[in-house]
Image (cartoon, rainbow, N blue to C red; front, side, top):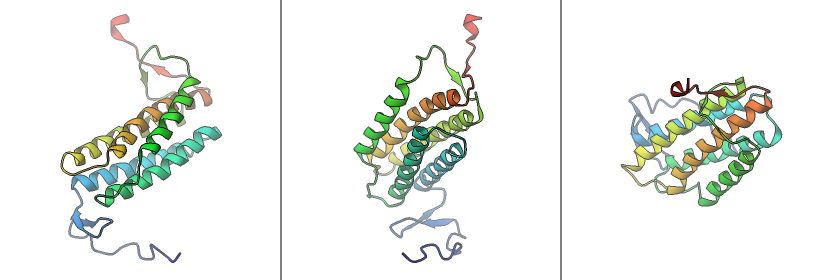
Length: 183
């Protein structure tokens, strides 16, 4: 394959528009670009989680997720294109169930923190929720593939479970919310 990105700046976006994967130009703040940006930010946040010393299964899971998020960004950038499928959601659910089976039941809400990797994973989870909201906003104006929306919803659940796994691997403690009504 040749150099796909041989020139980084093109000046074509200097007037506030950007190109979609199908060649159309849109405003840089339109819902489609907001959704693409939020998915990209989520992928970056997961990349940050991957800088920590993670167990193999957690690392493998997050690396797979990064590839699917890149696919999702591509899907959003080409109206009518579908890259994320029901089987991708099923794979997430299987990973989520597998990791969750290893954890004790929740008795309180968990606050972000407990260790550096867990805190970064909590940040990724929150960014995932924002990406989901941006995709939902786009879906109110244009057709969005349902598995793409479901994938982000399920991914935020998986990231929450991975926060719990990572904090244990870091020998940290989950930060439990102190319910003022029980004080």
